[in-house]
Length: 223
Image (cartoon, rainbow, N blue to C red; front, top):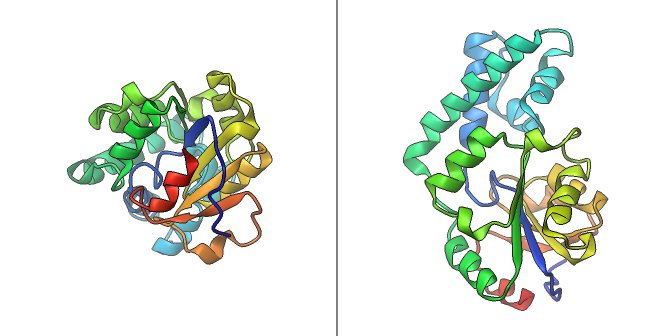
């Protein structure tokens, strides 16, 4: 499954677990909210399994669709994001090698965008905290789509914002639902093994290969 012989004209990055290795801090924040505040009594792995899509979707999957009012969902979501940022801020950093990868891609005139289920509050926290906004030609957040991954809307909107055909885009993802979203958008994908094991990605024909970080020399074949 390791075949990097593809020359994309755009890179589309998921954010969490793909540009930064922060997914454990999201899981810990939800673990705190769900167990300490909401009494769910769920273990870490169960919560990790539900960690995709928008915050209200996470809450609805775990607690049911009628458990919380819109205002309660909004408050719980913001409480969770504040816990996440407080916990992750001391560790805020790009995944190893990504700084040089972004710089080289820009030199090669590769368009770049973020396509993430994160809200702007968190995207800005990362993008401005790490000073990488100048590399990005577009950002598609949770607020910009009607349907979350694995629906293709996020990546299709990112491609449209770059004015590049989906088949010419390469997605970087860390989660099976994100890879499925790329597949549904007609896009090839490279997987970061920051969050899930390789075995969890069986059956996705759009995966070119797996990397642990952006120092992997196989990435040179993309340019």
